Image 1 (cartoon, rainbow, N blue to C red):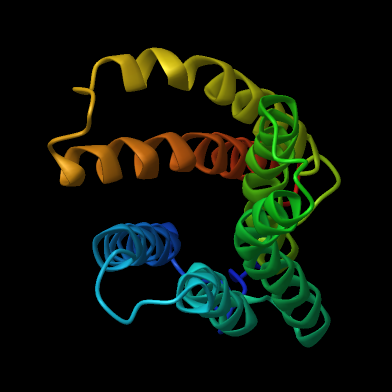
Image 2: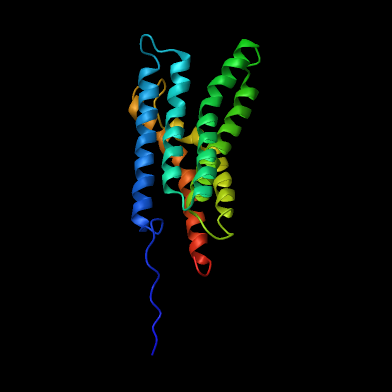
Length: 204
């Protein structure tokens, strides 16, 4: 009688908890960066370009993570590219708002358009980078669609959440926590959907 041996584990076939720990670390890192930005943006000597640089830091760290966690060299390059796009997108609203203000086109309609684009593109790039690095099969792109849908819903509903905070804001830490959690929801929803769809495919 012959037996079929299980394939030996490879460097990329790590337990799910490893990815979960990496994602948790990224979320904490993002929260710390957000806290630093909002706490120190008004400090003496803090410039506009300092804020732009800090906006980019989580994306640069994320690019390094997906470059290490990718399943093969091609995936690592593609994922790192998407993560660098996320870093650029994170800094873009400040640059766009500054350009609009300098040309006297900073109106509520312009702000809302920029907010919409930012809220949809940013989480989608995050999920895309992780999926390029880790996901197999042909169904995971549906996770990107889930990301977009959830991001749109969060953007529409976040005014309700902000109404729960005092005005003017007296608890900056609570404000940062709300901003961070709302930003994580579309990313986690899309990423978990892509992971679940991968598991549904035979052989994955």
